[in-house]
Amino acid sequence: MPQKSSLLVIDDEEIMREILEALLTHEGYDVRLAASGAEGLAHARSASFDAAIVDVMMPEMDGLTTLDELKKLDDDLAVIMITAFASVETAIAAMKRGAFDYITKPFKNDEVLVVLRNAIERRRLVDENRVLRQNLQERYGKFGNIIGRSPRMRQVFDLIIQAAPSRSTILIQGESGTGKELVARAIHTNSPRADRGFITVNSGNLPPDLLESNLFGHVKGAFTGAIYPKKGLFELADRGSIFFDEIGNMPLETQPKLLRVMQERDFMRLGGVETIKVDVRIIAATNVDLHRMMEEGRFREDLYYRLHVITIQLPPLRDRRDDIPLLVQHFLRKYGDENQKTDLELAPGALDLLADYDWPGNVRELENVIERAVVLSANRRIGPDLIPEQVRSSRSFQIPQLVLPPEGVSFKQVITDFEKRLIESTLESAGGVQKKAAELLHIKPTTLNEMIKRYDIRPRRRKAPNGSVVSREAGRAGTAANGRSFGAASSPASAEEFEQEDTGEAF
Ligand SMILES: Nc1ncnc2c1ncn2[C@@H]1O[C@H](COP(=O)(O)OP(=O)(O)OP(=O)(O)O)[C@@H](O)[C@H]1O
Ligand SMILES: [Mg+2]
Image (cartoon, rainbow, N blue to C red; front, side):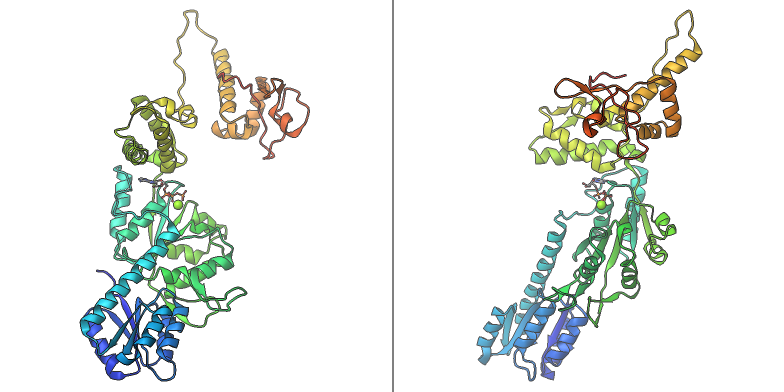
Protein backbone atom coordinates (compact mmCIF):
# COMPACT_ATOMS: atom_id res chain seq x y z
CA MET A 1 0.00 0.00 0.00
CA PRO A 2 1.41 3.42 -0.88
CA GLN A 3 2.32 5.69 2.02
CA LYS A 4 -0.19 8.34 3.07
CA SER A 5 0.74 11.86 2.06
CA SER A 6 1.25 14.10 5.04
CA LEU A 7 -0.21 17.58 5.35
CA LEU A 8 0.32 20.46 7.70
CA VAL A 9 -2.67 22.76 8.25
CA ILE A 10 -1.94 26.11 9.91
CA ASP A 11 -5.01 28.19 10.72
CA ASP A 12 -5.87 30.21 13.79
CA GLU A 13 -9.63 29.58 13.44
CA GLU A 14 -10.65 26.40 15.16
CA ILE A 15 -13.66 25.84 12.92
CA MET A 16 -11.49 26.00 9.80
CA ARG A 17 -9.04 23.52 11.28
CA GLU A 18 -11.89 21.16 12.05
CA ILE A 19 -13.40 21.43 8.58
CA LEU A 20 -10.10 20.84 6.87
CA GLU A 21 -9.15 18.02 9.18
CA ALA A 22 -12.44 16.21 8.55
CA LEU A 23 -12.22 16.68 4.79
CA LEU A 24 -8.57 15.74 4.41
CA THR A 25 -8.54 12.82 6.80
CA HIS A 26 -11.57 11.46 5.00
CA GLU A 27 -9.56 11.67 1.78
CA GLY A 28 -6.84 9.54 3.34
CA TYR A 29 -4.28 12.21 4.14
CA ASP A 30 -2.24 12.23 7.29
CA VAL A 31 -3.10 15.63 8.79
CA ARG A 32 -1.22 17.64 11.40
CA LEU A 33 -2.95 20.79 12.78
CA ALA A 34 -1.41 23.99 14.09
CA ALA A 35 -3.22 27.01 15.52
CA SER A 36 -0.45 29.50 14.80
CA GLY A 37 2.52 30.09 12.53
CA ALA A 38 4.90 29.34 15.39
CA GLU A 39 3.21 26.03 16.19
CA GLY A 40 3.22 25.10 12.50
CA LEU A 41 6.94 25.81 12.21
CA ALA A 42 7.64 23.64 15.23
CA HIS A 43 5.87 20.75 13.48
CA ALA A 44 7.73 21.42 10.25
CA ARG A 45 11.04 21.29 12.06
CA SER A 46 10.37 17.89 13.53
CA ALA A 47 8.81 16.11 10.57
CA SER A 48 8.65 16.50 6.85
CA PHE A 49 5.39 17.16 5.03
CA ASP A 50 4.28 16.78 1.47
CA ALA A 51 2.27 19.99 1.52
CA ALA A 52 1.08 22.73 3.88
CA ILE A 53 -2.12 24.75 3.94
CA VAL A 54 -1.61 28.15 5.54
CA ASP A 55 -4.15 30.82 6.38
CA VAL A 56 -3.03 34.28 5.26
CA MET A 57 -4.70 36.21 8.06
CA MET A 58 -3.40 35.14 11.42
CA PRO A 59 -2.54 37.20 14.51
CA GLU A 60 1.10 37.33 15.58
CA MET A 61 2.95 35.55 12.79
CA ASP A 62 0.91 36.14 9.63
CA GLY A 63 0.59 33.73 6.72
CA LEU A 64 3.26 35.36 4.56
CA THR A 65 5.87 35.27 7.31
CA THR A 66 4.92 31.68 8.06
CA LEU A 67 5.35 30.89 4.37
CA ASP A 68 8.81 32.45 4.34
CA GLU A 69 9.86 30.49 7.41
CA LEU A 70 8.45 27.22 6.09
CA LYS A 71 10.37 27.70 2.86
CA LYS A 72 13.55 28.25 4.82
CA LEU A 73 13.07 24.87 6.44
CA ASP A 74 12.17 23.09 3.24
CA ASP A 75 12.42 24.94 0.00
CA ASP A 76 10.51 22.25 -1.88
CA LEU A 77 7.48 22.23 0.41
CA ALA A 78 4.31 22.98 -1.53
CA VAL A 79 2.47 25.68 0.44
CA ILE A 80 -1.15 26.50 -0.33
CA MET A 81 -2.46 29.76 1.04
CA ILE A 82 -6.06 30.25 2.18
CA THR A 83 -7.34 33.72 1.88
CA ALA A 84 -10.55 35.72 2.20
CA PHE A 85 -11.77 36.97 -1.16
CA ALA A 86 -10.80 40.50 -0.12
CA SER A 87 -7.12 39.67 0.18
CA VAL A 88 -6.44 37.95 -3.11
CA GLU A 89 -3.68 40.43 -3.74
CA THR A 90 -1.86 39.16 -0.67
CA ALA A 91 -2.31 35.65 -2.01
CA ILE A 92 -0.71 36.67 -5.28
CA ALA A 93 2.14 38.24 -3.35
CA ALA A 94 2.48 34.91 -1.56
CA MET A 95 2.76 33.08 -4.88
CA LYS A 96 5.56 35.41 -5.85
CA ARG A 97 7.28 34.43 -2.64
CA GLY A 98 7.08 30.77 -3.47
CA ALA A 99 3.60 29.60 -2.47
CA PHE A 100 2.31 26.84 -4.71
CA ASP A 101 -1.26 28.10 -5.07
CA TYR A 102 -4.05 29.77 -3.16
CA ILE A 103 -7.67 29.07 -2.31
CA THR A 104 -10.22 31.73 -1.53
CA LYS A 105 -12.73 31.42 1.27
CA PRO A 106 -15.41 30.18 1.24
CA PHE A 107 -14.05 27.23 -0.73
CA LYS A 108 -15.56 24.14 -2.20
CA ASN A 109 -14.19 20.85 -0.96
CA ASP A 110 -13.33 19.71 -4.47
CA GLU A 111 -11.34 22.82 -5.09
CA VAL A 112 -9.17 22.17 -2.06
CA LEU A 113 -8.66 18.56 -3.06
CA VAL A 114 -7.66 19.34 -6.63
CA VAL A 115 -5.14 21.97 -5.59
CA LEU A 116 -3.74 19.59 -2.99
CA ARG A 117 -3.40 16.73 -5.41
CA ASN A 118 -1.48 18.99 -7.78
CA ALA A 119 0.72 20.20 -4.98
CA ILE A 120 1.54 16.69 -3.87
CA GLU A 121 2.19 15.56 -7.38
CA ARG A 122 4.53 18.48 -7.88
CA ARG A 123 6.27 17.68 -4.64
CA ARG A 124 6.69 14.09 -5.73
CA LEU A 125 8.17 15.20 -9.04
CA VAL A 126 10.54 17.63 -7.39
CA ASP A 127 11.75 14.96 -4.97
CA GLU A 128 12.05 12.44 -7.73
CA ASN A 129 13.99 14.88 -9.82
CA ARG A 130 16.42 15.49 -7.02
CA VAL A 131 16.86 11.81 -6.54
CA LEU A 132 17.39 11.32 -10.25
CA ARG A 133 19.83 14.17 -10.40
CA GLN A 134 21.67 12.68 -7.49
CA ASN A 135 21.95 9.29 -9.04
CA LEU A 136 21.90 10.13 -12.71
CA GLN A 137 21.00 6.55 -13.37
CA GLU A 138 18.01 5.12 -15.04
CA ARG A 139 15.37 3.73 -12.77
CA TYR A 140 15.06 0.03 -12.92
CA GLY A 141 11.88 -1.93 -12.98
CA LYS A 142 11.45 -5.22 -11.17
CA PHE A 143 14.20 -7.69 -12.04
CA GLY A 144 14.20 -6.87 -15.75
CA ASN A 145 17.79 -5.78 -15.61
CA ILE A 146 19.27 -8.38 -13.32
CA ILE A 147 20.13 -11.24 -15.57
CA GLY A 148 20.70 -14.71 -14.23
CA ARG A 149 19.08 -18.12 -14.17
CA SER A 150 21.75 -20.03 -12.31
CA PRO A 151 20.73 -21.54 -8.98
CA ARG A 152 22.89 -19.00 -7.14
CA MET A 153 21.08 -16.09 -8.79
CA ARG A 154 17.69 -17.67 -8.18
CA GLN A 155 18.51 -17.70 -4.51
CA VAL A 156 19.34 -14.02 -4.77
CA PHE A 157 16.00 -13.27 -6.47
CA ASP A 158 14.13 -15.23 -3.82
CA LEU A 159 15.84 -13.26 -1.08
CA ILE A 160 15.01 -9.97 -2.78
CA ILE A 161 11.36 -10.94 -3.05
CA GLN A 162 11.20 -12.03 0.57
CA ALA A 163 13.11 -9.11 1.99
CA ALA A 164 11.88 -6.24 -0.15
CA PRO A 165 8.48 -5.62 1.53
CA SER A 166 9.91 -5.23 5.02
CA ARG A 167 11.76 -2.34 6.53
CA SER A 168 14.70 -4.49 7.60
CA THR A 169 18.23 -3.44 6.93
CA ILE A 170 19.90 -5.35 4.12
CA LEU A 171 23.59 -5.89 3.58
CA ILE A 172 24.70 -6.86 0.08
CA GLN A 173 28.11 -8.48 -0.18
CA GLY A 174 29.98 -9.29 -3.33
CA GLU A 175 33.08 -8.63 -5.35
CA SER A 176 33.33 -5.55 -7.48
CA GLY A 177 31.05 -5.62 -10.50
CA THR A 178 28.76 -8.41 -9.27
CA GLY A 179 25.68 -6.17 -9.34
CA LYS A 180 25.37 -4.92 -5.77
CA GLU A 181 23.92 -1.59 -6.77
CA LEU A 182 21.54 -3.26 -9.19
CA VAL A 183 20.25 -5.49 -6.39
CA ALA A 184 19.92 -2.54 -4.00
CA ARG A 185 17.72 -0.77 -6.54
CA ALA A 186 15.68 -3.90 -7.14
CA ILE A 187 14.97 -4.16 -3.42
CA HIS A 188 13.75 -0.59 -3.41
CA THR A 189 11.69 -0.97 -6.58
CA ASN A 190 10.01 -4.06 -5.20
CA SER A 191 9.20 -2.48 -1.86
CA PRO A 192 6.21 -0.39 -0.81
CA ARG A 193 8.65 2.52 -0.87
CA ALA A 194 9.08 2.30 -4.61
CA ASP A 195 7.37 5.61 -5.28
CA ARG A 196 9.65 7.43 -2.86
CA GLY A 197 13.34 8.26 -3.09
CA PHE A 198 16.25 5.89 -3.50
CA ILE A 199 19.26 7.82 -2.33
CA THR A 200 22.82 6.63 -2.80
CA VAL A 201 25.54 7.58 -0.37
CA ASN A 202 29.14 6.86 -1.24
CA SER A 203 30.34 6.31 2.25
CA GLY A 204 34.00 6.93 1.82
CA ASN A 205 34.74 9.65 -0.65
CA LEU A 206 34.04 12.62 1.63
CA PRO A 207 35.76 13.85 4.77
CA PRO A 208 33.69 12.95 7.86
CA ASP A 209 32.37 16.50 8.47
CA LEU A 210 31.09 16.88 4.99
CA LEU A 211 29.65 13.36 4.93
CA GLU A 212 27.75 14.08 8.13
CA SER A 213 26.39 17.40 6.93
CA ASN A 214 25.31 15.62 3.74
CA LEU A 215 23.62 12.86 5.69
CA PHE A 216 21.96 14.83 8.44
CA GLY A 217 21.74 18.32 6.99
CA HIS A 218 22.56 21.38 9.04
CA VAL A 219 20.90 24.42 10.52
CA LYS A 220 21.75 27.93 9.51
CA GLY A 221 25.03 28.98 11.12
CA ALA A 222 26.01 25.41 12.08
CA PHE A 223 29.48 26.15 10.70
CA THR A 224 31.17 28.87 8.71
CA GLY A 225 29.53 28.98 5.35
CA ALA A 226 26.25 27.44 6.51
CA ILE A 227 24.26 30.46 5.35
CA TYR A 228 21.14 28.47 4.66
CA PRO A 229 19.71 25.51 6.50
CA LYS A 230 20.03 22.35 4.48
CA LYS A 231 18.12 19.11 4.46
CA GLY A 232 20.24 16.01 4.71
CA LEU A 233 19.98 12.87 2.63
CA PHE A 234 18.17 11.10 5.46
CA GLU A 235 15.36 13.63 5.24
CA LEU A 236 15.34 13.42 1.49
CA ALA A 237 15.04 9.66 1.73
CA ASP A 238 12.16 9.81 4.23
CA ARG A 239 9.75 6.98 3.53
CA GLY A 240 12.15 5.78 0.84
CA SER A 241 15.44 3.89 0.92
CA ILE A 242 18.99 5.01 1.48
CA PHE A 243 21.81 3.00 -0.04
CA PHE A 244 25.23 3.10 1.62
CA ASP A 245 27.62 1.99 -1.06
CA GLU A 246 30.97 0.66 0.18
CA ILE A 247 29.89 0.89 3.79
CA GLY A 248 33.33 -0.40 4.82
CA ASN A 249 34.74 2.99 3.84
CA MET A 250 32.56 4.88 6.28
CA PRO A 251 34.81 6.78 8.70
CA LEU A 252 34.91 5.24 12.18
CA GLU A 253 33.73 8.50 13.73
CA THR A 254 30.61 8.63 11.55
CA GLN A 255 29.67 5.01 12.24
CA PRO A 256 28.07 5.61 15.69
CA LYS A 257 25.91 8.36 14.18
CA LEU A 258 24.61 6.01 11.55
CA LEU A 259 23.99 3.38 14.18
CA ARG A 260 21.97 5.90 16.18
CA VAL A 261 19.64 6.66 13.28
CA MET A 262 19.20 2.95 12.67
CA GLN A 263 18.24 2.34 16.28
CA GLU A 264 16.30 5.47 17.20
CA ARG A 265 15.01 6.37 13.75
CA ASP A 266 15.67 9.99 14.44
CA PHE A 267 18.57 12.41 14.32
CA MET A 268 19.44 16.08 14.60
CA ARG A 269 20.69 18.37 11.90
CA LEU A 270 24.25 19.56 12.46
CA GLY A 271 24.07 22.44 14.93
CA GLY A 272 20.37 21.75 15.53
CA VAL A 273 18.56 21.01 18.76
CA GLU A 274 15.44 19.45 17.34
CA THR A 275 15.14 15.73 16.71
CA ILE A 276 13.83 14.85 13.30
CA LYS A 277 12.01 11.57 12.85
CA VAL A 278 12.56 9.62 9.69
CA ASP A 279 11.28 6.40 8.27
CA VAL A 280 14.08 5.17 6.07
CA ARG A 281 15.06 1.73 4.87
CA ILE A 282 18.77 1.16 4.95
CA ILE A 283 20.53 -0.92 2.32
CA ALA A 284 24.30 -1.25 2.47
CA ALA A 285 26.85 -2.83 0.19
CA THR A 286 30.42 -3.91 0.60
CA ASN A 287 33.08 -5.67 -1.41
CA VAL A 288 35.40 -6.07 1.54
CA ASP A 289 35.33 -8.53 4.39
CA LEU A 290 33.54 -6.46 7.04
CA HIS A 291 33.99 -9.19 9.61
CA ARG A 292 37.73 -8.91 9.26
CA MET A 293 37.55 -5.13 9.40
CA MET A 294 35.58 -5.47 12.60
CA GLU A 295 38.17 -7.81 14.09
CA GLU A 296 40.89 -5.36 13.16
CA GLY A 297 39.00 -2.55 14.88
CA ARG A 298 38.30 -0.69 11.65
CA PHE A 299 34.57 -1.27 11.73
CA ARG A 300 32.34 -0.96 14.78
CA GLU A 301 31.07 -4.22 16.13
CA ASP A 302 27.62 -2.87 17.05
CA LEU A 303 27.12 -1.43 13.57
CA TYR A 304 28.35 -4.65 12.01
CA TYR A 305 25.67 -6.68 13.78
CA ARG A 306 22.98 -4.08 13.07
CA LEU A 307 23.77 -4.32 9.39
CA HIS A 308 23.67 -8.09 9.32
CA VAL A 309 19.93 -8.46 9.70
CA ILE A 310 19.49 -9.80 6.17
CA THR A 311 22.56 -10.52 4.05
CA ILE A 312 22.54 -11.07 0.33
CA GLN A 313 25.69 -12.65 -1.01
CA LEU A 314 26.25 -12.03 -4.72
CA PRO A 315 28.25 -14.78 -6.40
CA PRO A 316 31.25 -13.88 -8.54
CA LEU A 317 30.64 -14.49 -12.23
CA ARG A 318 33.17 -17.34 -12.34
CA ASP A 319 30.91 -19.23 -9.92
CA ARG A 320 27.89 -18.92 -12.18
CA ARG A 321 29.31 -19.46 -15.62
CA ASP A 322 25.97 -20.88 -16.84
CA ASP A 323 24.74 -17.30 -16.88
CA ILE A 324 27.43 -16.05 -19.25
CA PRO A 325 25.55 -16.76 -22.53
CA LEU A 326 22.42 -15.08 -21.15
CA LEU A 327 24.36 -12.05 -20.01
CA VAL A 328 26.10 -11.87 -23.38
CA GLN A 329 22.74 -11.88 -25.15
CA HIS A 330 21.46 -9.16 -22.85
CA PHE A 331 24.45 -6.88 -23.42
CA LEU A 332 24.50 -7.58 -27.17
CA ARG A 333 20.92 -6.36 -27.33
CA LYS A 334 21.60 -3.38 -25.05
CA TYR A 335 24.65 -2.13 -26.93
CA GLY A 336 23.25 -3.21 -30.28
CA ASP A 337 20.28 -0.91 -29.68
CA GLU A 338 22.54 1.91 -28.62
CA ASN A 339 24.65 1.54 -31.72
CA GLN A 340 21.85 0.82 -34.19
CA LYS A 341 23.12 -2.69 -34.88
CA THR A 342 20.59 -5.49 -34.93
CA ASP A 343 20.68 -9.27 -34.56
CA LEU A 344 24.21 -9.36 -33.27
CA GLU A 345 25.67 -12.67 -32.19
CA LEU A 346 28.93 -14.08 -30.96
CA ALA A 347 30.80 -16.65 -33.04
CA PRO A 348 31.16 -19.89 -31.05
CA GLY A 349 34.93 -19.35 -30.77
CA ALA A 350 34.37 -15.98 -29.14
CA LEU A 351 31.79 -17.36 -26.74
CA ASP A 352 34.20 -20.14 -25.74
CA LEU A 353 36.78 -17.54 -24.80
CA LEU A 354 34.26 -15.74 -22.61
CA ALA A 355 33.08 -18.97 -21.01
CA ASP A 356 36.64 -19.94 -20.04
CA TYR A 357 37.77 -16.62 -18.63
CA ASP A 358 37.81 -15.98 -14.89
CA TRP A 359 36.22 -12.49 -14.92
CA PRO A 360 37.98 -10.81 -12.02
CA GLY A 361 35.89 -7.70 -12.76
CA ASN A 362 32.71 -9.82 -12.90
CA VAL A 363 29.63 -8.68 -14.83
CA ARG A 364 30.96 -5.15 -15.26
CA GLU A 365 34.01 -6.52 -17.06
CA LEU A 366 31.87 -8.75 -19.27
CA GLU A 367 29.63 -5.82 -20.08
CA ASN A 368 32.64 -3.72 -21.09
CA VAL A 369 33.99 -6.50 -23.28
CA ILE A 370 30.67 -6.81 -25.12
CA GLU A 371 30.23 -3.07 -25.47
CA ARG A 372 33.68 -2.78 -27.02
CA ALA A 373 33.04 -5.70 -29.39
CA VAL A 374 29.69 -4.27 -30.50
CA VAL A 375 31.16 -0.87 -31.22
CA LEU A 376 34.13 -2.26 -33.13
CA SER A 377 32.31 -4.99 -35.01
CA ALA A 378 31.69 -4.48 -38.71
CA ASN A 379 29.59 -7.64 -39.01
CA ARG A 380 26.54 -9.10 -37.40
CA ARG A 381 28.64 -11.96 -36.12
CA ILE A 382 31.34 -11.05 -33.63
CA GLY A 383 34.48 -13.16 -33.87
CA PRO A 384 37.24 -13.98 -31.38
CA ASP A 385 39.40 -11.21 -32.86
CA LEU A 386 37.20 -8.65 -31.12
CA ILE A 387 37.71 -10.21 -27.71
CA PRO A 388 40.39 -8.30 -25.81
CA GLU A 389 43.80 -9.75 -25.18
CA GLN A 390 43.41 -10.19 -21.42
CA VAL A 391 40.45 -12.51 -21.97
CA ARG A 392 42.09 -14.45 -24.77
CA SER A 393 45.47 -14.92 -23.13
CA SER A 394 44.17 -16.28 -19.88
CA ARG A 395 42.38 -19.30 -21.28
CA SER A 396 42.50 -22.00 -18.71
CA PHE A 397 45.84 -23.64 -18.47
CA GLN A 398 46.38 -26.89 -20.29
CA ILE A 399 49.41 -29.12 -20.30
CA PRO A 400 50.40 -29.65 -23.94
CA GLN A 401 49.75 -33.02 -25.54
CA LEU A 402 52.85 -35.18 -25.34
CA VAL A 403 53.96 -37.62 -28.00
CA LEU A 404 56.61 -39.97 -26.77
CA PRO A 405 59.39 -40.76 -29.31
CA PRO A 406 60.16 -44.48 -29.76
CA GLU A 407 63.55 -44.10 -28.11
CA GLY A 408 61.93 -42.62 -24.96
CA VAL A 409 62.86 -39.42 -23.15
CA SER A 410 64.84 -38.37 -20.15
CA PHE A 411 62.24 -37.81 -17.48
CA LYS A 412 64.47 -35.34 -15.66
CA GLN A 413 65.21 -33.35 -18.81
CA VAL A 414 61.53 -33.06 -19.79
CA ILE A 415 60.54 -31.89 -16.35
CA THR A 416 63.40 -29.39 -16.26
CA ASP A 417 62.53 -28.03 -19.69
CA PHE A 418 58.89 -27.81 -18.75
CA GLU A 419 59.62 -25.98 -15.50
CA LYS A 420 61.83 -23.53 -17.32
CA ARG A 421 59.26 -22.78 -20.01
CA LEU A 422 56.48 -22.48 -17.47
CA ILE A 423 58.48 -19.91 -15.53
CA GLU A 424 59.32 -17.98 -18.70
CA SER A 425 55.67 -17.87 -19.80
CA THR A 426 54.47 -16.86 -16.37
CA LEU A 427 57.02 -14.08 -16.15
CA GLU A 428 55.82 -12.90 -19.51
CA SER A 429 52.17 -12.86 -18.35
CA ALA A 430 53.21 -11.08 -15.17
CA GLY A 431 54.82 -8.30 -17.16
CA GLY A 432 58.19 -9.34 -15.81
CA VAL A 433 57.29 -8.79 -12.17
CA GLN A 434 58.61 -11.74 -10.19
CA LYS A 435 56.34 -11.20 -7.22
CA LYS A 436 53.28 -11.40 -9.42
CA ALA A 437 54.64 -14.40 -11.32
CA ALA A 438 55.20 -16.18 -8.01
CA GLU A 439 51.60 -15.48 -7.06
CA LEU A 440 50.38 -16.89 -10.37
CA LEU A 441 52.35 -20.07 -9.76
CA HIS A 442 51.30 -20.26 -6.13
CA ILE A 443 54.90 -20.37 -4.94
CA LYS A 444 56.98 -18.10 -2.75
CA PRO A 445 58.86 -15.29 -4.54
CA THR A 446 62.11 -16.57 -3.05
CA THR A 447 61.49 -20.02 -4.55
CA LEU A 448 60.82 -18.49 -7.96
CA ASN A 449 63.91 -16.35 -7.69
CA GLU A 450 66.03 -19.43 -6.91
CA MET A 451 64.64 -21.26 -9.94
CA ILE A 452 65.27 -18.28 -12.21
CA LYS A 453 68.90 -18.35 -11.08
CA ARG A 454 69.15 -22.12 -11.31
CA TYR A 455 67.85 -22.22 -14.89
CA ASP A 456 69.65 -19.04 -15.78
CA ILE A 457 66.50 -17.55 -17.23
CA ARG A 458 67.58 -14.30 -18.76
CA PRO A 459 65.48 -11.25 -19.10
CA ARG A 460 64.69 -10.31 -22.62
CA ARG A 461 65.24 -6.76 -23.56
CA ARG A 462 62.81 -4.34 -25.03
CA LYS A 463 63.56 -2.33 -28.14
CA ALA A 464 63.49 1.40 -27.52
CA PRO A 465 61.48 3.45 -30.03
CA ASN A 466 64.69 4.63 -31.74
CA GLY A 467 65.73 1.09 -32.40
CA SER A 468 68.44 0.85 -29.75
CA VAL A 469 67.94 -1.87 -27.20
CA VAL A 470 67.54 -0.72 -23.59
CA SER A 471 66.13 -2.17 -20.47
CA ARG A 472 62.81 -0.60 -19.55
CA GLU A 473 64.04 -0.01 -16.02
CA ALA A 474 67.20 1.62 -17.24
CA GLY A 475 65.22 3.79 -19.63
CA ARG A 476 62.99 4.92 -16.81
CA ALA A 477 65.48 5.36 -14.03
CA GLY A 478 68.46 6.28 -16.10
CA THR A 479 70.64 3.52 -14.71
CA ALA A 480 72.98 1.58 -16.90
CA ALA A 481 71.45 -1.31 -18.77
CA ASN A 482 73.49 -4.39 -18.20
CA GLY A 483 71.09 -6.81 -19.77
CA ARG A 484 70.09 -8.27 -16.44
CA SER A 485 67.60 -6.21 -14.63
CA PHE A 486 66.21 -8.72 -12.16
CA GLY A 487 67.67 -6.78 -9.31
CA ALA A 488 66.55 -3.35 -10.42
CA ALA A 489 63.97 -2.17 -7.94
CA SER A 490 60.61 -1.27 -9.37
CA SER A 491 57.94 0.39 -7.26
CA PRO A 492 57.04 -2.41 -4.80
CA ALA A 493 60.27 -3.13 -2.99
CA SER A 494 60.11 -6.88 -3.45
CA ALA A 495 58.87 -6.89 -7.03
CA GLU A 496 61.74 -7.37 -9.36
CA GLU A 497 61.55 -6.38 -12.95
CA PHE A 498 61.96 -8.91 -15.69
CA GLU A 499 62.38 -7.47 -19.13
CA GLN A 500 61.54 -9.17 -22.32
CA GLU A 501 62.13 -8.52 -25.95
CA ASP A 502 59.24 -6.83 -27.66
CA THR A 503 59.04 -9.24 -30.55
CA GLY A 504 55.54 -10.52 -29.91
CA GLU A 505 57.08 -13.98 -29.93
CA ALA A 506 55.78 -16.32 -27.27
CA PHE A 507 58.12 -18.46 -25.24
N1 LIG B 1 23.09 -9.78 -13.01
C1 LIG B 1 23.32 -8.73 -13.81
N2 LIG B 1 22.58 -8.58 -14.93
C2 LIG B 1 22.81 -7.54 -15.75
N3 LIG B 1 23.72 -6.60 -15.53
C3 LIG B 1 24.47 -6.70 -14.44
C4 LIG B 1 24.30 -7.76 -13.52
N4 LIG B 1 25.18 -7.59 -12.52
C5 LIG B 1 25.86 -6.48 -12.80
N5 LIG B 1 25.45 -5.93 -13.96
C6 LIG B 1 25.97 -4.72 -14.60
O1 LIG B 1 27.34 -4.64 -14.26
C7 LIG B 1 27.69 -3.32 -13.88
C8 LIG B 1 28.16 -3.31 -12.46
O2 LIG B 1 27.06 -3.55 -11.58
P1 LIG B 1 26.96 -2.83 -10.16
O3 LIG B 1 27.40 -1.41 -10.27
O4 LIG B 1 25.63 -3.09 -9.62
O5 LIG B 1 28.08 -3.67 -9.41
P2 LIG B 1 28.68 -3.47 -7.96
O6 LIG B 1 28.69 -4.81 -7.33
O7 LIG B 1 27.97 -2.37 -7.27
O8 LIG B 1 30.17 -3.07 -8.30
P3 LIG B 1 31.22 -2.20 -7.42
O9 LIG B 1 31.58 -3.01 -6.21
O10 LIG B 1 32.39 -2.04 -8.34
O11 LIG B 1 30.54 -0.92 -7.09
C9 LIG B 1 26.47 -2.46 -14.11
O12 LIG B 1 26.55 -1.86 -15.37
C10 LIG B 1 25.33 -3.46 -14.06
O13 LIG B 1 24.27 -3.02 -14.85
MG1 LIG C 1 28.64 -0.47 -6.67
